[in-house]
Structures are given as structure tokens and as C-alpha cells.
Length: 443
Image 1 (cartoon, rainbow, N blue to C red):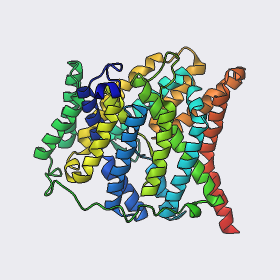
Image 2: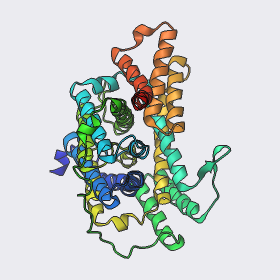
Image 3: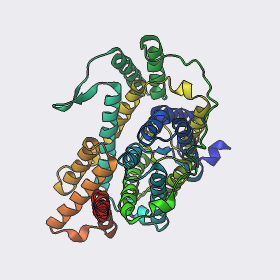
Image 4: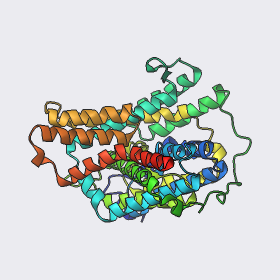
């Protein structure tokens, strides 16, 4: 019955593979349970325990909804970068956190309107094939960089920005986990990412003083009343905040578009014309998840690139998402257990996924500069700007400019022209909103 419901035979997968894939996705993104509350509470004063509970609930609800209604192995959660932007809005005293939640709510409603009108789907389908491959490669470089930083192989440097880190015990433990994953992949044995994460975690318990077994394995004191339904929508409806609302909308749109394009192609969720199957549903769920998250008290919810880890383990259906979402619900009770897994144990999984996504580079025609340069910009800017949305914006603008300069403006699809307008708005509107607020203050 489960096989028929999720079309497992048609997708060449099984219940066992989907469960392993769901567990893999959960382990690679479980850090969000602690990182999202830490970022938001430290900058805004929001209740940390309530944020832990809300992060788990919103992630579980959005991810399970993706599995049920879109039958896709895509996880959704409060977005990294998006939560930092939320924290910045409050910490910079532009607004208080209930108003910031109102801004998130309105951006989600605008996002949903764009989806219902079919504009988002047209935007995605207007992206040339070479740029789609570049998005996958750029995200692969991006998450590889994140993995290397979490592992401690790459560290910050005041002179060169980044440099190789020292070989510590934790780095060696993480590298051992990476070696386990490589071995499993070489032997074509599924579940290698999970085994590598668990192996590194076990070593961490024995050899890392900072990793200890918790005194309590079950947590039952999480409460969301301190932040749930505290958003101020009317307070967010100020002219000076419109730029911020649009900026959040475009950040979420480009982040989710980049993630969905990369992951759905990796999962084989495309038809013979290269169009993503069920794209409208996925983007609609993404938008509704943002609205739902704002109501409960967290920043913008978006599709997670860590979904690629589960997809690489064979996840092809919504059952993967349901397993991942179910584990986030369980995490509400077992937060101390999830907290045992150190970041350097999950980091190798991100590096491996980055490796897998690099294979898309062979689909880019580097002999054709009209395609090669925008693709190159997307790949480099996603990784070096530490932002999927920024990389996409620069790439789309450069693609259009090259077509215009080369006298091939007629080849630009109308939807791509809209994308370029959105890209320029994304790069400028927040600054415009800040200027408006500044001049109002002077007045």
C-alpha cells in the first residue's frame, strides 16, 4: 500500500531506501534545531526554548506536507541566511521581533500570490539548461565549503579571509567519518552517509571532551506560548518596510528556486522536456510554510539544500520527506540526544553531497561564452558570497546583459526578463527601504 501511495516502483526505490534517505537528510540538517534558535534568540531576545520547539514543529509540518502533497524528497525548514537577515532587522533596531514576524508573514503571502498566478513556475522554466547545471554545481561548491568549515579543515584568516585549519582530534574524527562514507560509496553500499555520521559521533563521545552523553535523554518542557501568534502584521504594513518585505520575498524565491532546481533534477523529477514535475505544489508548500512559520514565531521557511544528501542515498519519493519530518517531531522529545551529534560529524556528508553535485559541470558548454560566463558567475558567486540567492541574481543579470550586448536580445524569454527585474530589485530594494526610513527619520 505504501509502495502504491508513493509510486515507489515507478521511482525505482523501496521503503528501506526511503527510510535511510529520510534519516540521512535529518542527520545532515538536524543542526537547525539548535542553530536557528541560537541566532534568533541571541539577536532578538525571543525565548530560546520556545524557538527550539517551533523550529521542530515548522520543519516537521512543512517537510511532511511536501511528502504527502508533492510526493517529493524535499525537506523544508527556517532558512539559514534568512534567519540571519531576520535577526539583523531586529538587532539593528529597524523593528521589534513581532513586527519582523509580520514582515515574514507578508513576504510569505506575496510569495504565495506569485505561485498561484503561475509566475514562479514560468520563471523556473525560463532558466536555460546550462544555468540549471551551474546552479547545481554552485550549490555543490557552497555546501562543500560549509562542510569544510564545520569540519574545521577551513578556518577564517584576517589576511587571506580563509586558510587551512590545524589538524586537531575533531578534524581527524570528521575525516574518519568522511573516509567511511567514501568507502561505502566505492562499494556501492547504500546508507554510507548515515553510517559515517554515526561512526564519527561514536568516536566523538570517546575522544572529544566537549561531546558527552546527556544527563537526560527526554525533554518534555518545551513550550511555544512565548512567541506563537505574537506577530504584528499591521505594524509591518509601513512604507519604510516595503523594501524589506520585497527583499525577503526575493531571497526566499531565489533560495527555493535554486534548491528545487538542483534537488529535483538530482532526484529525476523532470519530464522529457526538462520541466520539474509538481513544481507548483512544491513552491506553494514553500510559501505556505513561511506563513505558518511566521504565525508560530520563526523566520522564513524555505527548501533545504541538505535534501540532496537524502536524494543521493536513493530518496526519490515523499516517503523520504515524511521520515525526515517524523524525526523532527521525535526530536521535540529527544533534543538532548540529537544535540550529541557534533557539527564536525555531519560535515563530511555535506562534502560528499558537494562532490556528487559537481558532476553537473560536464553539462555546461564552456566553448560558448554566452552560456559559460553566466554559468561561471553563478557557480562562483553562490559559493563566495555565501548566498544562493545572490549568486543566482548576478548570474541571471550577466546572462541577459551578454545576450543584449551580442545582439541576441530576442532570444531572451519574457519570463527571463522578469527574473532579471526581480534580480535587480533583490539587490537594491533593501537599500532603498533603508534610505526611505533614513529620510523619514530626518523629516
